Amino acid sequence: MIQLKSLLNESYISGIPDHEIIAATLVGEAGGESLEGMHAVKNVLQNRAIKRASNEAGEALRPKQFSMWNKATNGVNVRSDFDRKKLQDVIDLYIEHPKWKTAVGMSKRYLQDITDGATLYYAHKKINPPSWTKNWTQTVVIGGHTFGKV
Image (cartoon, rainbow, N blue to C red; front, side, top):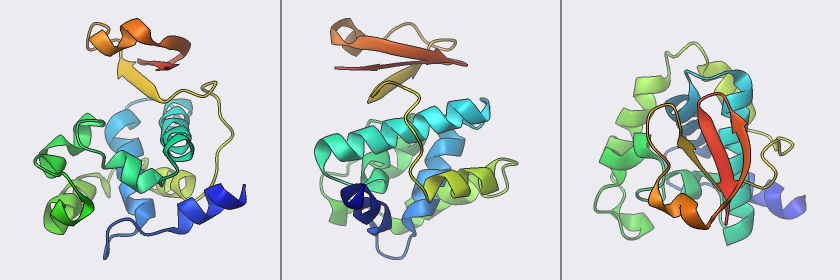
């Protein structure tokens, strides 16, 4: 737990609080889902951060991982490539969302894993299973998302 706590308190992008990056990811990816759906997306961030010994904000901003960040992370190869204004513009899209305060609360703490260790998911109501799901183990379906791990 100590390792995860230090990961939660680390600042990934100077000038942007990690909890805002995480909360924007929860709302952007699952704001139309139940609170359980947002919880599950948070679990994916936690599981990735633990697996890669990184932090949740860094996992949220990893290029081509969370579609709601794609425009802001296009062309990013290293942390110094991030454009803070582009990131803040994405965050600002979600600050007025009805679930923003809940997402901020979720972003600031460890949430018990309800995904059985999932590190991946896709929106099964919107798209067919992506090619990368061929080598994964599906763990749970929550709302419009199917979760799994490799």
